[in-house]
Amino acid sequence: MLGHLVSDDAAAMALALQQASLALGHDDVPVGAIIVRDGVVIAARHNERELTGDPTAHAEVLAIRDAADHIGHWRLEHCTLYVTLEPCTMCAGALVNSRVPRVVFGASDPKAGAGGSVYNVLADARLNHRCEITSGLMQHECGTILREFFAKRRKTPTSTGPASTDSAATDAGNETA
Ligand SMILES: [Zn+2]
Image (cartoon, rainbow, N blue to C red; front, top):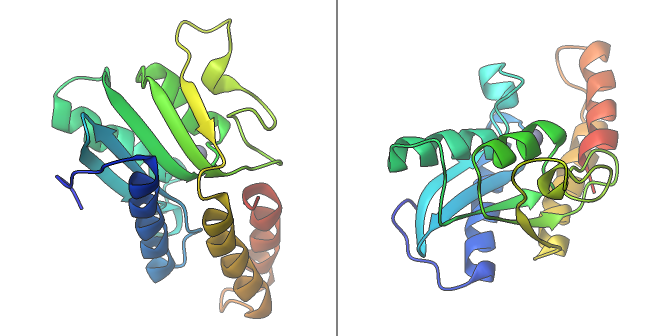
């Protein structure tokens, strides 16, 4: 996926969706993100919070780190980040701090979204950088993979017991569109 040329926003979001599906392999909430610079994919990651036990291992943060490594600088000029779910406050903050010019997201997150749904960290006039936002691209596909994940998880109690089931329910409320 890295180094791929993408012709338009839809092609880029399709790759982000592919990333999202990879998170299912380790029971992470299926969110994927890619970063495109001058038409080339320079980062492609998915949520690894369960896999790594790292609460900051959201797809966007991991992709930002990879892109900065690739460019050799923290400032992600000429980049667009595509993510299947509206960024949370942490990821939106990271995007502002990386000066990403443009963010494209699929499904909205009415419970925790920071791209306009609950907060608009991405485009707050009080901050020193604002991202151009395109929302709702392939939102049906991006939302469906999340809904299916949470529906399946609610039906299948995990081996770690009730505490985990509780947190799954909370996550469903916080993370599905
Ligand atoms: Zn996040």
